[in-house]
Image (cartoon, rainbow, N blue to C red; front, side):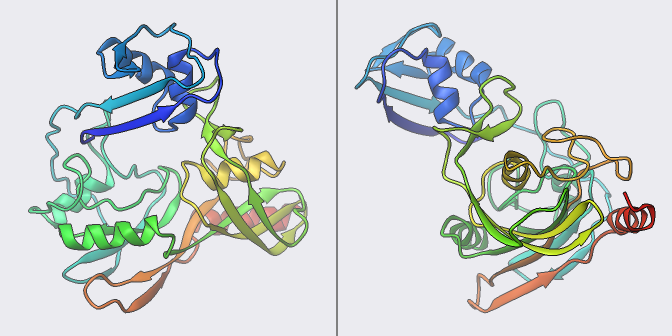
Length: 302
């Protein structure tokens, strides 16, 4: 992670500083906030504090994220399914089970390690996640873009930031979701108790998900989902919040008798090519494990 600073102004008194930071910064867990406070990287009105310090309305909270230690990334001969490639980017059809980029305690076996075997001199983006413009959860399959140079990384990142990218997912939920077309709008932030999870919370970040029913299969609904924002676990959190968790999502719902992972697939991705501005759209068919799960559900009338 590169150096990053942010400043927040407290609107209500009485919240502990570590809790306040974790609630208002979805990328910072409470444990991480406590470590930042101990290191003097979080201050109140310019003064160092302890984690138990309670805030007052109008306090200024300054947060500085120090750079992460250098990560020695290695190229690994992990097979990649590349649907498109030019001088600026690759569109990869990511398999379920493949983590996108290394993290502490998980420095190998990722999409980045595989990409480095294909592009040994890749320098685009952050040093600890070269080429990565956006992410998919480990157990979500489907389309992801890898930028091949700094200019294309910047232009693609801007498209995601400005919500100009077409993102379409296929997912299966339990129950009959109605109406057949709808929008879920609910702010998402760090779960107040289970810090590794996200949740719909009042002080979270704006999140909007559009869905369209493809068909009902017995007691299930197959959906086309279009996230209009890019919050962590957004589709899974939103569908769970309205009572229709993604099939096989043990984190936000229940395990599946048909699948060993969540039924979520990034099926379509559309964006403008960085060099020409031409709009291109790519498609990925449902992988075999999801096709097989649908077949079993249809056969079992469950």
